[in-house]
Image 1: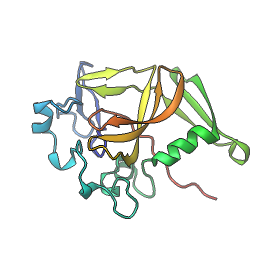
Image 2: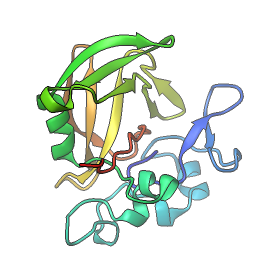
Image 3: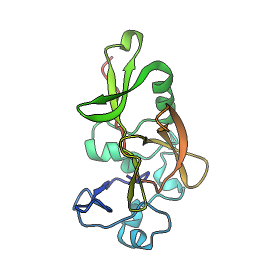
Image 4: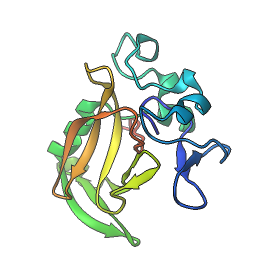
Length: 184
């Protein structure tokens, strides 16, 4: 997904570019300068630059209509906030692992949440027509835009060493890890 995109993209049949995950036909590149992407991609969903119409004024995060998790899963599913991503790092045990043949990070809660956990695959990210660092790195979007007009916060693992929250350009293709409030 581009940040704020609700369509989503997957690798094409030749594994050398991207197509819409909805209809498999829309050719795009994850790039700010790709004229084809700007022409074929629905501009009402292309959130490369900061505009207030897709930010929820009461919470300063991505409007639910432009939150990929909410649009695809409905209910109370949503993209995590930057603070939630930071809490994940500080309040969980995190280790590099392989699960069912997929490289990633096992994230397990501590104390009363020790029985809770998630797996974050090292899915890589889209850059131009390429899938970068699949199997070694990831960037998962947060719902928080940065104060810079073309960046948003994301959970990342750089050089497979540790997890951090940093700013990344919104035209990168990054996965979304949905969250929701769990039963108390």
